[in-house]
Length: 114
Length: 109
Image (tube, rainbow over all chains, first blue to last red; front, side, top):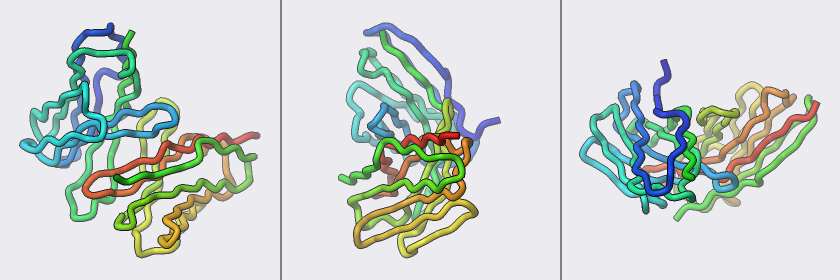
């Protein structure tokens, strides 16, 4: 089984719909992240969480919200999806050492908003 | 904020060496990373270098770090078709990771 699991893997939704992307991890890490990937722009940070009670906005949080239901679960919601939110979304985790050495990524969720 | 830049495309012939370059702006980064993304998959850590090192070698991979110029490179020796992927340079800015746009490496037979 994968250490970081994202569901669904693919989703097509209509403009204006609410959608939730889910992420669960078995690494036991406190830190979790949501990124979106767009061609030529790399990965941009949407939200991050350093523990269950800690939620922080990343560089592109507008139009998104998150919920950290447990150490192992971190969900990303699009309250009212719009076409420019069509992208590949990645969840990641890392170990909260003083100097983080690696981020572990899920397989990604390809979201299309029509 | 931190900015990480890479060229977007690189094509090499099978058996040649590939060199992927990256520049970054934050001089306080502790680690710099190279991640590999194969089609349909997430990112996987390929290698990383601690900021007090100039070079790190791991089998076919050589990472060079020039802190003065804030330049990082990844050399892949004897490039194979299985090396075709997108390669991301990243650093740990503050307590987060900042990624470059990715370099798509195409290996021609």
